[in-house]
Length: 268
Image (cartoon, rainbow, N blue to C red; front, side, top):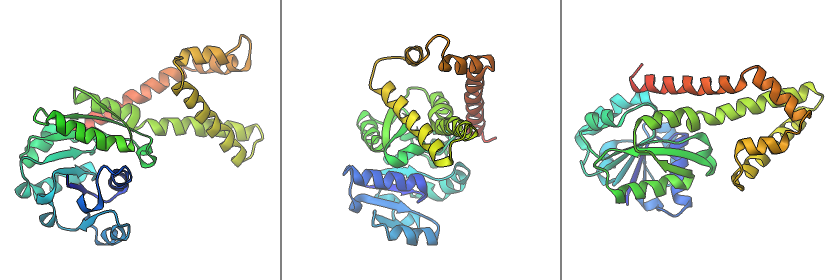
């Protein structure tokens, strides 16, 4: 299977390197289309496949075409590709907000998969939600899921609307976690810890809590009860969070992200 990745940025390279590292494909079958001459030269030094600057030289060879470019670049890109496309090719898009129907109409194709990865995919710990048009076969879906799973976990969703929701939860989610981590680090420094001490205290606490959660059947509520003794320090902190409606603010933030994802899908 020949794969063409359009866009040699962070996510494009994350996919190329993950596919090769997992041996799900090889350098001979990997192609990257990069319009920037400077970036193309840099990519050529990485020895991760064949680098192209013109779609005419590579698009027809691909079984799977991956769009790893900015959403605002899609209209011009699609216009330049339409005349070169084979309708039997499969197209995988990770462009936020660009609907499957828009891709099908712009390219004149019917086999389109839309995915929403997140940044931890760069270290093989990503979370990707994906869905597809009706003409994508089960074999093709399994093939793409195997590719996406090289960067972490991948989940298929039936309705495309769920991709916008995944954007709000897992796509933007790492920033929410880092926001909370930074807030705790700030608190630690106010309590007298150095920057490095604060970073270690908070990062290891998050790492340990996530590992405990993932390796047992306890819910978040059950773990909270285990930590929260009556009249203790954890109870005091959680009482403050509840008084200030922190949970409601977190939900409201995710809902704001969802609204923005929908707006982007409408081109707003």
